[in-house]
Image (tube, rainbow, N blue to C red; front, top):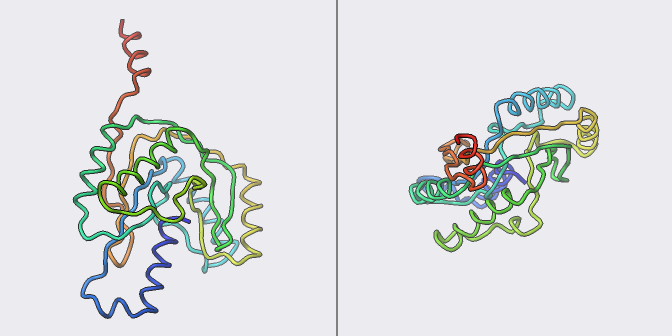
Length: 217
C-alpha cells in the first residue's frame, strides 16, 4: 500500500472518531520515497489517463509518482528528518532501479512492480532502522521482510475493473529502468500531499571511483 492509501485510511479513521474536532491543527505526516524518472513519470501519466478513460472518474491516480521507502508516519516537526535525510544521502551511492509488470492489491489498487535489489533493500531497511532507533518512529506493520516495492498507478477500482486493468497493463509490457540518484520526503500538510524535499545521493561507490580514476589515467 502506498503513502496516499495509508493517509486516506488515517484521515478516514480520524474523521469517524471525531479527532479533528479536538485538535486545532491536524498532525503532519511524512514519508521517504524515491521519485521516478522524468521518462517514467510521463509514461505513467499516459497509462493513468488510459485507466481513467476505461474505468471511470471514480478511479484515483497518484499525485506524485514514487517508490515508497518508508510508510507515512506522524510528526510534530520536520527538521529532525531533514537532518537525517542529509546524513542518509551523504552515505548512499546511486543505484539502478528496474520497474516492470503490473500487479494489484485487493484494496482496489493497481501498480507496477519494482525489482528487488540489494541496494534498494538496504536503503529501505536503513531508513526504517534509523528512524526507529534514533527518532522514535516505530516500523509500520507493512514494513517487514516481505515488503513489496511498487509504484502505485491508480486506486479505487472495483474488483472486476481491477483485474481487467491489470490484464490490460500486462499486455503493454511496462518496463522502465532509471538511475536512482535522489531520495525525497513527501509531507502531508493535513490537507494534501506535497513534495517537501529532495536530496541527491552523494556517496561514490568505491568500484565506480576506481573505474573513473582508471579512465583519467
